[in-house]
Length: 292
Image (cartoon, helix red, strand yellow):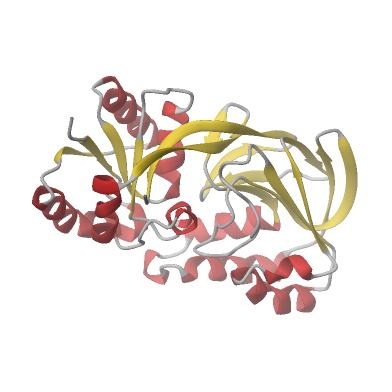
């Protein structure tokens, strides 16, 4: 039976990028002979409802959006063996697509909807909420908040903008990190639990992270001067920052994190929880159409 698609579009994603791409995407899907219908989301909760309806109807739930809506849809469908998710990049970061080898141009990514294979993919869990990429906090909390408030015309530069603005007022925090029962206390910048390897529009925070190993790559960045941090920032785009003395990566299925002051935990670009927090890997929780 040919695939039937439920296209779930976030009109505001990527500063309107998803909406601008929609006519060309729909034309390409028609040219491929794919049956589909399109619905615009009003919120993440609405996106979850649409994904559930699609799965109940035997349709592939396809997000034309950024990673935030994708994470919401993954949360709605996780654990459903009959559900399949498709991904059309329409946000500013599109890190999940980048890691999976899905073309970053939405029209080009339509080929994966037609020819791709459904494969099991892990997700992360924060207090019952689902993310597909990286959950992080500390300095990242401040940078994400600023980035989310930044003007849309900055595009992918919004993440660098957020980091530079956050740097000006940052003071180090003390974190308690417990990975699969192994505890560590550190003073420094941030703690991240990576289900995927990238965030922030191509920053390879956890370059060895895999979407199908049932583990989180926990990345901690200990104290350094602001100048040292700034010099090391470009290394994150190549993943070579993990060679720095103040960066450590350990793997585990569960990480518990607390700190000496409150932080909001961000994942897939959106707030997902507050400290103290427990983050878990959920193996093979969703099936996603990936390049064959």
